[in-house]
Length: 217
Image (cartoon, rainbow, N blue to C red; front, top):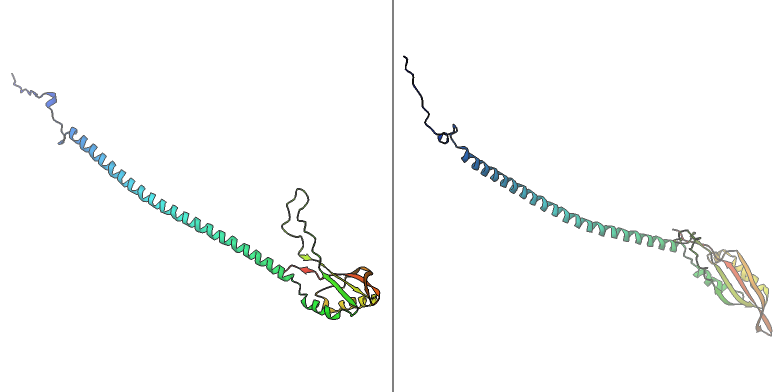
């Protein structure tokens, strides 16, 4: 009869140890702690980056606001410059339409015949400009033309017709071109109530077309 050896396992199940040198119940808390630490570090990094980005965004927004204010000021000044340029341009137009009639008027006093008494020299006002278009259209911003025509009225008294004819012939000379044109008409020529040397004088009114005023540079 052969003898055999017997092996008896007298350890209880709860007394068995893991083959790992560190028990799982120790590694799990340590791993969880490391994960939490890593998460905290990651959140700290993200939070720091968010603060940096927010600071940069606030700086950019401040710069944009400052530039918008500067841009609005620049646009305002550019509009003012355009307005002043338009005003200067308008003044140039008025300067272009300026009549220099001082010398012709002074010369007129020298050519009036002795038997002619001038009672008035006037330039009637222009008719009011009608800038209102037909119904349904936009009102005009200004006159449709830059040319203005006016009349010169010369009224006076004389003893007879001949001195008045001499006055009209004198006004036909080139020196009076800045004052009147050759377009003229006699509005009236009639007996007046005023007497001179025992006889009544004749009153007259001459109407001359003045040179056109061109409002241009």
